[in-house]
Structures are given as structure tokens and as C-alpha cells.
Length: 269
Image: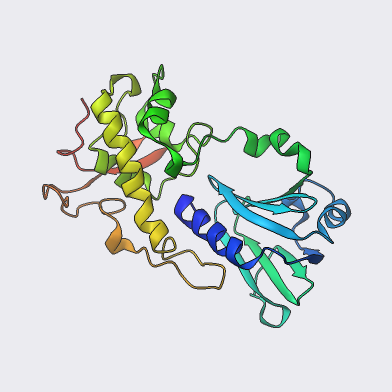
């Protein structure tokens, strides 16, 4: 599943390549990904020029001159800029541009392509409740988010309504860098630990963003990201030595998900 580093890097690429392109047609293979009927969706976006591309959490915000095109890749997928002569084998949507290029969008599972009128963006149910982007957080904002909370730390960090963009791919290294156990009660964190966590969010996400995302995700031109397993500190490395103390990394159950931890560096206290 693409997370903040992948989505942010796609937004960066799209914002460099797409502004000024005019949508002239849309081919819809999977209508259930839309928030409108196929004809309504086509009418809304065709003839629109792309102004800017940004992101929030795991959503891409494509600002058109007549509203917003919102894309979410769900459990994974690709967004490729190419021509009709070089289409991938699988796609769910194609946005054709007047310059003969096109944007092919593929969802593995649970992807979305929504059109929202200019003045109704704040009313879009799936994006208006998103928390701030993880990389935009400072210590003060993080303390505000954590204040008064009584749950477990990992669950809150994965809650997109609290902090947008962190998922299971990067959460393990973030908590390791902060030296915090995923099941740590939020209300037990000290100011110093929250400061470490704020720094760890940056250190756990920025290296992947700088490498155009994870190796299993494709960028706008079909190239894989260069953040590989060698760059991961402890995530998905059960039995390997901790890079800090050499203790064996453990895989533990945390609610409905698994977590990878160093039991020495991340004690549950």
C-alpha cells in the first residue's frame, strides 16, 4: 500500500508534469471507484485544465480549473503518464489529454477517483476528516494531537484522522527510532519522548521520500522507487540483529496487526 513517501513523491512528479494539460476524455473500466455516475464524472472533468497537484495523507489532490479530482490508490496501484500506444496491461481509468498523452490509473483494491466541485472540497467526506500530513507536524502540533488520549501509541499513529500518511510499512522504524513500544499508553509519554517521536516521524519517512518511495511501487514514469529493504532498520526483519544493540528483532501481535520491535530498545514500560 502506498504511504506518505510514495504519495508525496507522486504528487511532486505530477505537479511537475501535469499543470496545463487539458482533459479531453475519460475511459472508465471500474465505475465503482467513482463518486458520480460515469456520465456525470466525464461531464465534470472533461474540458478541465490541471492547475496544481498536492497531497494529503494517502490522497492526491488534482486541482482543476473547474473543481478537484481526488485520487486514492487504496491497497496499491499505479498512476502512469504515457500515451495510448504504450498502455499497461491493467488499468481502471484513463484520462486522455489534448496533447495526446494520457494518465492511466490502476487500483489493486479499494481505490477511488472522485470529482468535487471547487467550493465543496471541505464537504468531501473521505478527505475532510484527515489529520495533518505527518511530515508537516512539529512538536507542538504532535503534543496537541496526543493530549488527553488514553489509547495505545501505534493505533493513534495509524489513525488517518489524527495524523495522515503513516501506515504499516513505515510505522515500525518510526517507533524504533523514537525508542517507543507500539503498545505504549499514550498518556504515559513524557515531553522528551514526544519530542523524540516528532523527530522519528521525520527520520522514518524522509529517506524514502528522497528515494522516490519504496522499491515495490512505480512512479509516474514506471520506474520503481529506490528505498529498499536495506534501508529499513527493523521493519519486517524478524530474527535479524537490532542495528543499535544487536538484540534479535521480534515480531509481536499488536491488536489486529503485527509489529516489529527491539525488546531492549523499545521496552513496554
